[in-house]
Length: 332
Image (cartoon, rainbow, N blue to C red; front, side, top):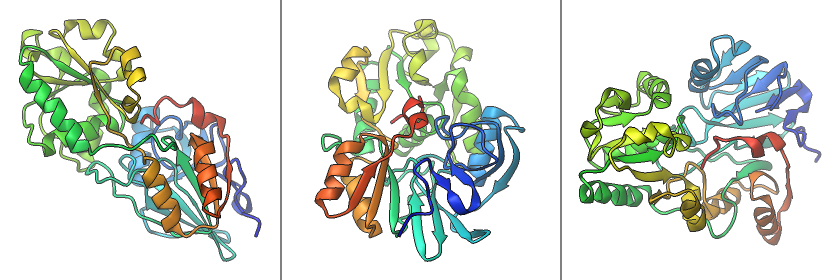
């Protein structure tokens, strides 16, 4: 059966695109990261959380029209049924389940399967064709337990009470997850934020995610930041902004921190392997559990996952969606 989804993620019968990199008349947006959500579309279909994120990041007029769709609520568009399923990547992130003439296709967007109270938990959707990301699609990527990594961070905070710990985290998703993980591990002191983090943390709180006491880092003196945790964009932890921190311990929270050479080259003293994407085992688990016969792989290390799928008797091929490769935020 020929798929009704094209390799550029155009849904042929309704002329709509999933996460298009250029403005389109009809767009379905999986989540708010900049390599998936762009301004300038005509009509945007997304979860209410994703729409709220897009409006904060790009303005109220980021699209000509927004249509919110709650999770697990089928929407009939001509003869295609569209359902958004939780992807677990960040707040509001969705997989797109499409049904047309007996065929079921799922585009995962970015996803993770580990529990995370700052995102709606991943839900598996059985399908005939799965379009999956493969950010960490190599066998070497086996993510540790996030709370074990948080334990390493908290031990360092106790060991160096005169130093600030600055954690490089993307402003959308990773920053809020790091704060929630710290709170869940029992850390109840104020957490200090770089200015780029503040509005999105406020949005998460507005959407019902409790993050505890947060303070702008610029309102604290250098002495007050000794022994404290500061959350900042990765680009800020080594620029002039960080010079006002007392002897900072530089940390970065990312799945890429499992690549030790990458951490060393970045000057990271405390690499924290905390990812908002599936690792190799979770990718293969998801593919097996969906019951698919055909897999398209995009956004990352496609070749190894394609090989593994074919080895397991599935039809599989890589998709080269250039805009996904250019994004700064799919992070990790």
